[in-house]
Image (cartoon, rainbow, N blue to C red; front, side, top):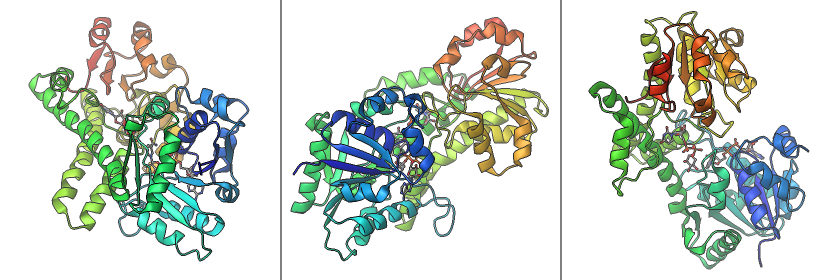
Length: 463
Ligand code: NAD
Ligand code: UDX
């Protein structure tokens, strides 16, 4: 029997876009995305499709097409579980902030809650799909909970990690490099794998659908993120050496990227990687390696994080040093707060940590980001716990005009590579700034020559 009804628990950055694309590509399957966060569900159901809670280019069109037809958003988790043949678990798996493994291990409490809810509610056989990124061997724990319900329902657990990147979620989902599905090697396991393959085969070429055992699939996701983050830390490490030696990191990246064994993608030096995945997943990998006693493996991967923290810190330190060793009372304009362009997501954004270091030196920060709201910026600073909300509100202002943000600033820091930053009237910005007018380009985004011609003192990364 084909899959007719899918439920996805978790209407976040992964659950929302992933299910929207499945619904668009499989009009015969009813897809219900559920979440315990009623505000989030209300936003997904907002009459004005531009108000859906996640900004991703192209996503609102897909939601507009499928919502109400075969795509539904609801807070009624029990009903959606009961109805579904296949249940995706796409809840958050943050780094643990308490107890054993604090600061490293993945917190699996939301996953376990889902498994227990499925066990309690399910009255018919289900295929349960791990969509969240999970430590290798989590499927055993889920299976253990599901197999002890005592109500005779049979469950198959699959691992189907998601590789989409934010900002490009729609193209990544519509034309993925690969879809990975891990399952049991038993006949029932193979049958469950085949059913999920059949769903994806509606739009993904068969040769791009890879099937493995569950453990390989779970570990491949952590490995992919570790390798990607390692590339960013590697080029960022070289950027510091470039600054000391007169080499240019863009030229170095281009030169090595033309070696087909290395490849040219993901070699942009930056103020440091952010986002909800890289740090969390590497810390999790480090924790897993440590728990198997693999010290060298753990230390190797931890260095990727250490390098990234260093890159964020040295960006802030350089601003302070260049501004004659004091930023106290000086206005620093931040262009960008999101962790990368084309998303409103700010989780672990480098901007937060750079701001924290500058605020510790009593700087005044004015922020402009085309997609991030002022309330989110204040929330991110509050989460740091470095100072009171009142202090954050006095020291950090947010405007929706880039020209106001930069007015009378001593320096501009580019934290996100939004395309629109390249198109501004930089002469106008310069005319209204304090002199010397500094630009610290944490994304090597702007045209150095043009800016220097105007009169800016420009500093990029790795140049
Ligand atoms: P998110 O925080 O945006 O969304 C998770 C949602 O799950 C939240 O809305 C939360 O309210 C809901 N939730 C949690 N427990 C629940 C429960 N018991 N019942 C109902 N709803 C519940 O997280 P995300 O960014 O979508 O990430 C989800 C998972 O996907 C994580 O494991 C993450 O590592 C992985 N992942 C994320 C990305 C990404 O780009 N964000 C990419 C690939 C994989
Ligand atoms: C990442 C993975 O790419 C994706 O496959 C996985 O599913 C989730 O985690 P995401 O975090 O959304 O996706 O964005 P990504 O494009 O990987 O960027 C992560 C961070 O690295 C951003 O802060 C980005 O600016 C930074 N980065 C990326 C660089 O600094 N240089 C680069 O060359 C690439």
